Structure formats: structure tokens, C-alpha cells
Length: 261
Image (cartoon, rainbow, N blue to C red; front, top):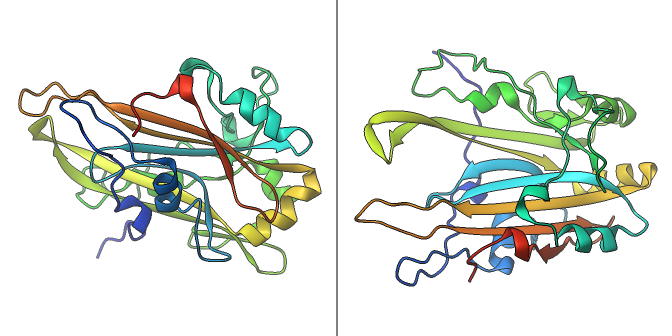
């Protein structure tokens, strides 16, 4: 029996994010619903928080979550100003190049936190119906941060634990080959991934660096021009930050968004 080491599809990937549609005009559900469904505003104390992820919802909305680090002093003001940027200039840095920060990268108000390693091996034949490319690309922290926090990867590749064996991070990946909605003769590999963090660990680890999380959350439904289902598409972008021990605060990035209910 072939195992591709996938995980179960999380609840946040099973819910829909499209709001009310008027004619051909799409919309994204309101902010409160977005954050609750993504697990960023959980009513369960101590629930794991998503700090990185991307997938497509059942109703075709592409979700992207990225987090970065910012100096605690003045971070609210920097997030507010950051949220006012236009789409092409609104992005958070990530680790590339083997999980090491690029010293020549453009100056930004935030520093990278997440490393999404590129690895095209999926562990089974890439054309296998159960193959999931994200298995070989589980998100993690940068190399230096992993060392700084003394995190150890579990042999199954899913969990990162502290020196005293407390859970810090858990990755969740899923995917399968599905028919292309634009051309049913073709199939595409529909993948998703989330990196979850323990809020207790975040509250202990980040103050050691005098940093706190900055978030960027993007939800986008692309335009369709099929005669029987023409739609405008919609986009909603939020910028946020999470002070240690507190809930996440978000600001709507109006210049980078369009058509939200």
C-alpha cells in the first residue's frame, strides 16, 4: 500500500467564503466570518493559530495566509500604514534560498518568519491520483529561527517541539487530482497546506526577540467568462498583528481589495 503522508482536510478548508451575489457581481463574506472560519478568531481558548497557509475553498475562493515578524514598539502604526499600500506593493517577506534571509532583499517594515521550501518530490508518482505535492513542501520557520527557538522536528515531519517536548508548530497538508473546471478532459493537482502554531508557544517565544506577529490574509475569487457562469470576481485583503496573549487585530486593505460584502 502506497502512503503519500497526507493529512485530513481541515475544517477551515471545507467552508465557503463567497458572500451574496448580485447579478454577476461576486463578494467575499464579512471580516468576522472570515476570521472565525480561518481559525484566526477561535472561541476555543488555546486553539492552534494558522500562521501560514494556502488552499482553494469549495466555492472557488483562493485563500492565502502569511505571517512575518515586526518590532513590538510601533507595530500597530506600521500595520495601519502597510494596509494602505496598493496591491503590487502589499506583501510580507518570506524565507527562500534554503531558509536563510536574503541580505540584499528590499527594505520592508517586517522581517520573514515562514519558510515554504520548494521541493517537487511528492513521495509517489506525481501522476498518482492521491499524490499531494505539498507533502514535500511542508511550511516551517527559517533555519536561524528554528535554531534560536531550539525546535526539533518529529520523525513524521508534521510537528515541531520545544526542548521540553511541548508542541510549538504543526503542519497540515492535503490534496488530490481533480477535473479541471474549465476543461474536464484535463486534471489538476488541488493542494492545500496550513502551518499551525501554539499560542502559548508564540506568547513565550516571540517576546524573547522583542517581536510580534504581523499578518496578511488574502481571499480571491477569480473572474470567470463562461457564458453560463460569468462573474466579476472578488478580492479581500487584511493586514493584522497579534500582541502576546491577545487576540489578533486586523485592518481592511482597501486599495488592495475589491467587491466585499
